[in-house]
Length: 351
Image 1 (cartoon, rainbow, N blue to C red):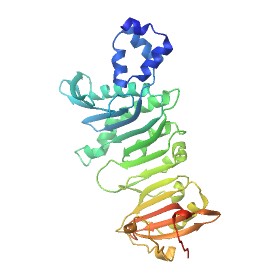
Image 2 (image 1 turned 180 degrees about the vertical axis):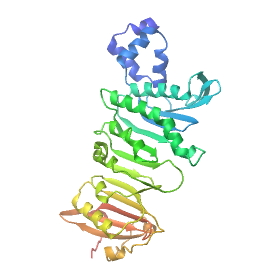
Image 3 (image 1 turned 90 degrees about the vertical axis):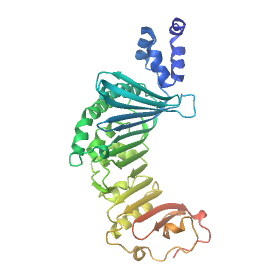
Image 4 (image 1 turned 60 degrees about the vertical axis):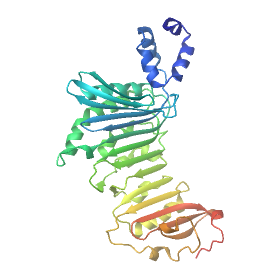
């Protein structure tokens, strides 16, 4: 059977391998030296569409979605732990849960071997790539950030080295980071293909309530400038100027407070940028409240969805007779601007 397979014309053999799910491809590689060498030389593309990595000092989790798996549940998750006799893994997939002790080396080594193999065969565009450094899992509160930073340093360097050595950059549509500062993100994001990035999500993995975060270096990247959507977790306060988000189509951020100047800039962005459709800001309700009614004037008195969310105002867009700016707020912790079609608001009267 193996001889018949390896004797197939190369193009047919590649087509067969690219239809296999990733587990089958790895298993086939172990059948014989000829197949192993062929797979290593040709590097057939896998069907993996999403990759999720979560790291803490006790465990690393690697989960991926493989579209070539012939089951409804197309996910495979491998958890790597240190064991007194080496590394143990727990694999969850449509085939059930399997526990295994895989060797004497540290669990980080086995994790990296698997991730490196996954990345090696990744030629198509990933729908999602997620990397979370789980600082909240560390027990020594006063040193937990330093502990995980030092522990993950080698892993992050290996990922960076892998990404920078690729002939074709890794292509990702949505990229998601769980971090405590921008330096963790800057080790990876600059080396993702900027042409394919559509959405960037940033979450706080410290787990101790809202924290300030600087993103000034991130905003200079091509990946930031080419993305159309940005979401920054509610547990991160950002202080970057509103203008740094003007090129996006959809924005969700959290600020300590928002004043009249920021609101005016937001309205100007919607007036001048045809790309901007949605800008949502959460802010700290304990701060001094700004009476937004003094900025917006007479509120919209018609009916609309999510009326319980807060008052609404409607404004014209200069030079755009078909669209309007909708502003909605609960007056103390949430503000949302959206671009809406005039045709969707019947009997509108704009004051």
